[in-house]
Length: 363
Image (cartoon, rainbow, N blue to C red; front, side, top):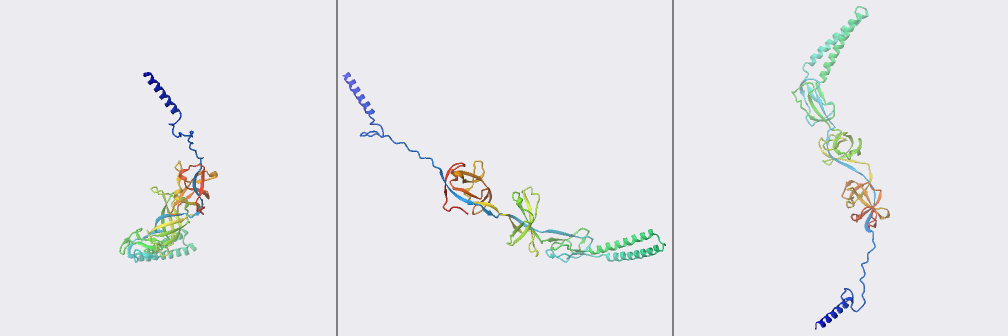
């Protein structure tokens, strides 16, 4: 019996081996037909990446420098006493319009008329003595030395008269310029010494508008360059650059710029907030959508274009101004085809397939 069992086991094993060898258990093989191999996945041919492009042309951009500032007086003249005395008259008030020659302070005469009369009498006496000596000198009764001495005495008397006359003139302190009376410290009854302040006159014609310009823009400005001024009151004025500071403010690294504006009626006062607009010479630039700007691997800002053989190129740019319409940049050729969609997925030197935008070239 044991022998028969071995025989049956051997036969069963042979049948199983034959069945497996026939391929009935292999996936994808049909029992009633020949085996068919599964086709391998076909690989697509490499195609250039599609990007959207648009051609941009440069435009003449009228750049304007805008500076916040304020008005300042052209100058402030401090009118001081040239002689001493008590103030008898001070007819003007602070804020009054002043013209050249208007009386600001008048000092008392004191004993000046008496001193003048005395000096004039001495001058007349000296003249008579000199004339007498001159006559005697011609007859050889007086020496030339005596004549010279009398001439010197006469000249000294004349200088004394002139000095007192000037002292009398100086008792009336007048304005040397047209302007506005800013201050009047010398009230009636005050005593002024030589050099003390009688009044201050502010000169407002022309008016000066000052502002601070950054060091990157100061090189574009020059004296006598036209400028426009808009006051906080709404008044619009025109002037020219009068002065550009030769040295920057250490703290802010800015330069003071002064614009001179006519103000014949003194209507523009000192200290009004203003905006200075300085137009510059027009230069070619490109107005681009801000989304086109990006950085390369070195951190340089620029745009990507499609050049010869449809290869991607990176162009560094310099941003001039941000506006609602886009970003003004410089540094590009007059006419250039830029990638407007897909630029983030391509690198410089890569070959792409450009697809023009529907709107075509931007003029």
